[in-house]
Length: 381
Image (cartoon, rainbow, N blue to C red):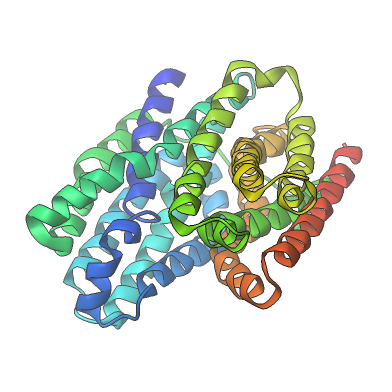
């Protein structure tokens, strides 16, 4: 299978997958909440359910991908996404909506980032980091592509029609791409055998580092508008600057694709994990007004966090290799996905209780802990 074809197919399916799962409540949430009797913001609880279940299932799915191949897993993920979205469109209350989120959690484990990275890993270690970066670039466009499409579909057919159209897209677009373009498992493929059933120590340290980074990073990202506003910027300006996090993340991924491979993945990740706490502390210590400090903080944070989305799978390949990647990555990334699910709800009360300055200081200290964990993993190679 040509690497460029695999990469292009995964780029399309990742945009579709993230756009109709993680980003769906951003457009359809208010209408869904009114119809389903959910409290304001309740639609976003579905994201926590989806990601939490995907994290729990990732070790099992990783072993299955190594045994049966990414083609089978991602194709089944497309079917599960379609089924979950149909259930959501049919829901008349919270119960069936929660069931739909559970089905999409299974779909996420089978077809979103970790499964896509495993498919790329089957193409070999040479050029893997560049392919991971290009896929992350495509994924970063998900909201920009799907939000306008979902808004147009809602205006024409209502939120249920938009959800059904999303299900159809998984069946008519993602499913064929996964089945035709993703490599099948090689003959005799087996899951990686881990000594004693445990990850090697360096990968356990790596998992801990990434879990801390994701816990802090997802918390900051989800609450960026409230955080910048709490630092003293008016709401309209806070929204405008916070929105630039996404473009900054995409720019960082593009820079890594263009020239980042001259540094090892662990070195690049270490630099990013040092840059993030500096960005978090900048509004507290820099002799600048909030009108300058907040934008610099947002853009610096966006660049560093964008790099980390590529470095997580790249570091796994660098420290382990591509043989049995899905099994190992599933174990490494399971707590990371769980952290992504719970982080936004943890940081918001912290921000209210302690204030922006103290919350940023706590986050910076935690991120420095993540840097220390990563350096331990690096020394164990």
